[in-house]
Length: 111
Image (tube, rainbow, N blue to C red; front, side, top):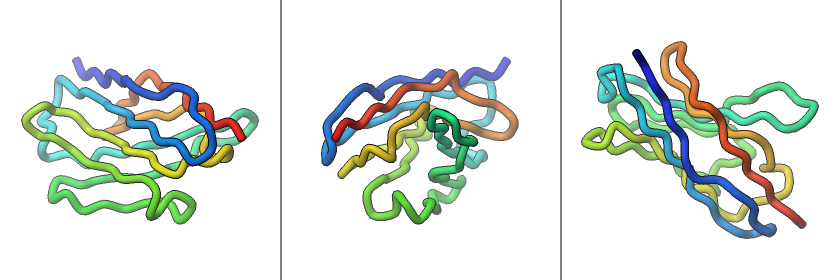
């Protein structure tokens, strides 16, 4: 079975930082592209960032320069470091690979 277990998140003020982790099991981790998505209340889930097996990264324009996605293949874990957070970054964040999703973690940024 494939499991994606998220940790991190929480509440911060504007300009603060948070780090999300997603530990993956049940797949050959180092061959997979990992992605982060988020969903704000009343909005559709949107892709935020991804990192492929060669560690090439991509970001949605709204977070580029503030968020960093990384991976540790020895730990089968993908991370999302979020800096200079804004209220519009608030939502539930999900990690994803192939057709599997993490359980989601809440990020709240207050002004």
